[in-house]
Image 1: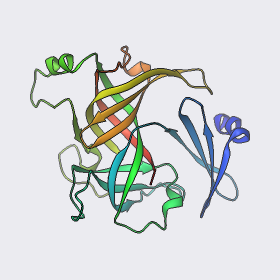
Image 2: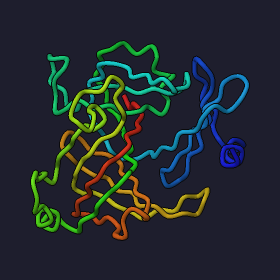
Image 3: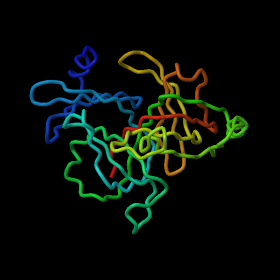
Length: 230
């Protein structure tokens, strides 16, 4: 609540059908979206506005039991085939930072999305060779691979309400150690190219004592939150 109150006076209001988003944006890409109805603040969503792009064919909306009217997610296929609805590189789910403003979008729809991948856990390697040398066990994963973990239970069965979570590995195209302007805490940002597209990866330094470098590899489990560019 203290964070929300400190951000509100300097945030940009974005009206939506069921309330209002208040977007605080830093020069470095970090954002915080406050979610408000007519009476009060009802939630906050962190986001990172970056350079990653994923072409997605959106096929369904995902609504969870504890979502507010301003929250939501999409199910879709990365790098879809032109004329086949449920096909592409892989299916996955991602939260949408301004979901309430896309309620009238007719599905299926092919869009370009910018998706931030916030690390739950992550490993950073200085090169593709270093990553490949680490793959001593089975199964081995390619240095560009993507598993839509949120679509399945730990036992491998499909879940009724999928999570916006993925396990992926990719090549670092750009990287920087940034400072959060609200808290002065540092974090790692990397533009990561993986199978099916590129993502803006955000990592807390507590998860990795090694900073990403261009030409290196990042692998881990990530929460996916995006916005529709087109």
